[in-house]
Length: 82
Length: 235
Image 1 (cartoon, helix red, strand yellow):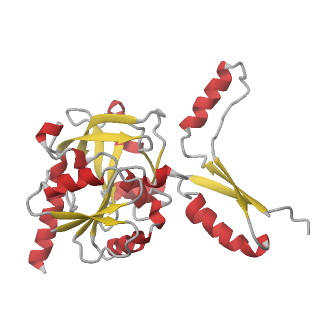
Image 2 (image 1 turned 120 degrees about the vertical axis):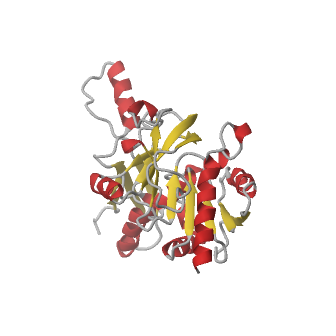
Image 3 (image 1 turned 120 degrees about the horizontal axis):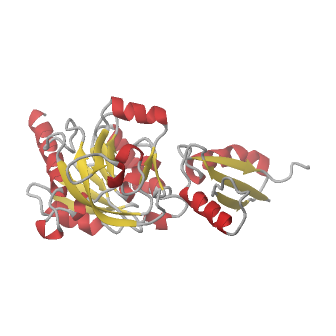
């Protein structure tokens, strides 16, 4: 079972990488890109029942995979279809 | 006084720190490998610069879970002096021993330069040997040195005079042009509320000899030594 974690910089944190990419997009003629934010994407292959591991996964997202001072995270559990 | 230099895989200023500290009268120093579990028995702890764990995930994010860090956190909370330089500063922030975080330089460039910093507060073990406004010429070398803290944290840092160093120009003016990385309010180094943990992006370890261009870094280590000696005399 695969779990996905998406980490993005908080709105209040400057993202110069995103700004540089947005500029490049504009140079390429795509002026509709108003803002670009660059984050991090993790795929975690799990053994066992994902639901029972969710609390521990959330803890890891908070303590290791993201830094809550500067980043938000989103944990995507496998399809909830049982 | 005995200073422990913690070596993480990827530390690369451990030798700079050792050479700098051993060059100061009254300081003994040696390495402590990150897999050790105790820093008991040392008077001060140094987290050196470098790229611990290749800067994977975030700078300092993995080092903060090294076995030795549990003991570093305990000792820090019990009042021991801890100084984190560059990557060491990033590790201290990740470990929650210092507020805020260090993010990508605003310019996106790795900066390798000599900067001037101004001493903002002297009632700390790291700056007690200097007057407020003293200027320290120190080298910087980092890609993620832009200090960030939310407004509330920033307010508290200023309120409690936890900002010990700010980037300034050659005559001590804290101006945007003197800011090498986009740090909020030109912050170069901060201490915790209890004032025994200090993190800074510039390298005092690389500025302890005149022939290296500056010996101002030694003033920070000498302040620590003086503070430790005062505490020991009082005990």
